[in-house]
Length: 211
Length: 316
Ligand SMILES: Cc1cc2nc3c(=O)[nH]c(=O)nc-3n(C[C@H](O)[C@H](O)[C@H](O)COP(=O)(O)OP(=O)(O)OC[C@H]3O[C@@H](n4cnc5c(N)ncnc54)[C@H](O)[C@@H]3O)c2cc1C
Ligand code: SF4
Ligand code: FES
Ligand code: FES
Image (tube, rainbow over all chains, first blue to last red; front, side, top):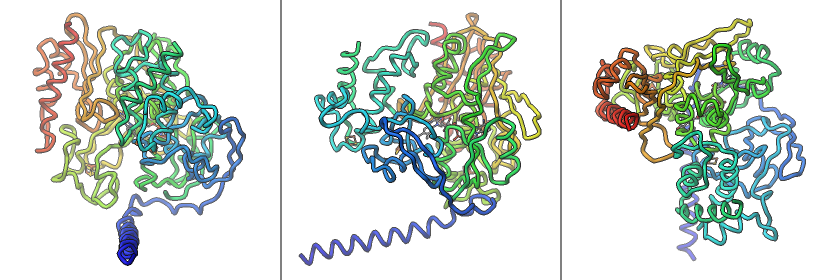
């Protein structure tokens, strides 16, 4: 017991220590450029549709779409991995197109239609892509999975709409849902557990059904 | 992120006036570069002017048989346009070699041209960086410079322009169209758009504060085979170490520009003329006077090999 609380203590000590370091380290950031004083934070109204439901919010303009979904609408299915566009965990669909919700401001989405993992399917009524991820073991820890699934659904739609990709030989030909195509198009979704090949299998399954 | 105020501009004039009239104001399009940098307070705008309603989201034919690409056309829509795929394949290839599907859905044509360098010290606010804080020095010189520039750089800054799309636009002789707060319009050849750093690496381009990009025009198609060869640390979703944009004609003549090597897409017209003599002749001319570091000297032979690969594919 003592051992445990010591561990707890030292862990807290470590966290406090690193927080303090972070503050010291972050200080020079304010030297960025000799710009006028930042205005006092104010809130702006914004309304958009999330998974078919109209939502009205009043937000600090700094709020990203990701934070609006998770922190203000409690839609925590969408994940924050890097917060810098580098991992894809935050992928959602806006007006039918996949984007990184961490690199867009919520106030820029007035009137938009947003679909998150919660809107694709429910535990009782899975989206075919969700069912295929389960069938093919397309995840391990599951953290990247909501982003992977939103991206996977959007990728099949992009292929159908003829959006070109880096691995296409003939740019004027219609792309097909091959393994190589899906891997390239899914490269914006990182999986730390390395479930990639099973994700591609799940997508192939769904693509086959649609074909 | 520092606090800012936000407005959604109704038209181009209002947008330009809103930024020009307010120190610290900036345009925001897709937000994928600006917000990234605001989160780490490398960018600290006090006011954002959202340009999404300005209507610059179409691609139309120009009178002389080229294309006018609206500043807000997304990278995805530009790459997917049937005319671009058919007549300007190098542009589609360059775009789809960049970033990820999600990012390309948001990235705008103007924002892509204006994306800032990926020099790691520019991102680290603890380090000296003349581009981020003029006069503070350059941590990259004598530091870790594997990704950085080999030509056109200066003793103040050795960073590169990191983008792909602009390298293809340089080969195509694109022109950037702007309007300012007074309503004055400019047409800036892409060759002159990105600055060489000199002693002002804080200024990336020749744009004036509040000058709004409205479109990028492409001259009439030039035919030939189109290539974008991008060499990077992983097969996808990574910036270029070196890239080659090229249009090669059946007789072996053509045009070539290099990415990932300089403050701007690097094209030397006198080097284009050497294409029939092979890759080594072209790069010897294009990179004459290069000043690589110990870390990034590999970019010079890599550029030659990437171009050799393109020339071989053109002959196949
Ligand atoms: C993880 C990651 C990987 C990436 N990989 C690549 C890659 O491999 N290759 C590549 O080329 N790019 C890559 N990018 C960069 C991406 O392409 C850019 O972020 C994007 O193109 C910027 O466009 P935007 O519309 O989002 O710009 P914003 O972020 O909205 O704006 C960028 C700048 O342009 C200004 N601006 C915007 N519109 C206008 C206008 N109309 N007139 C005047 N000024 C304007 C803004 O004020 C801002 O300073 C990557 C980005 C990320 C996050
Ligand atoms: S190379 Fe340029 S961007 Fe990088 S640290 Fe030096 S001044 Fe800054
Ligand atoms: S959290 Fe948005 S891309 Fe990583
Ligand atoms: S399942 Fe763990 S990160 Fe992808």
